[in-house]
Image (cartoon, rainbow, N blue to C red; front, side, top):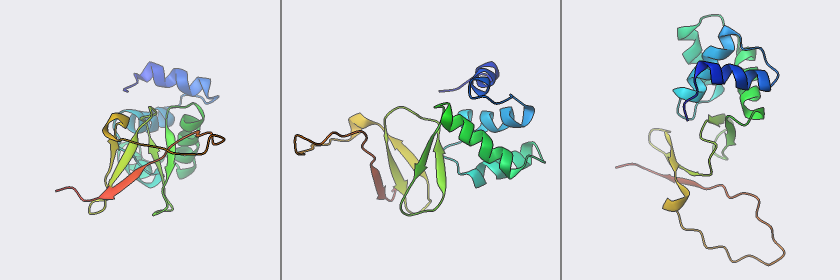
Length: 134
């Protein structure tokens, strides 16, 4: 989903944040250009485009985006980094172990057959498939 500048402004206001130039720059990258960035990736990108944006502004902005439901934070066992995903629809991930690239996998591409006790209520299923692209 690509958001216009005006839609980003609206979402930031809804999250209780002023839509400053710095925040809009971060949001344009995270929501419209990046592919599963970490805060470090975001900071490196904005340093090229808008020098002087603090790391705290990056953290606060992605937290506001998460609170607003525009990104989801992903934490994997293999890393201490938090990855931000602007695809908030249900989906799974494939991690290319050679490149570190994270790819979205649509739910219809995966078959899940759960045989759980009747008293178990599943709230979420998180799948990370690790491998190598050929």
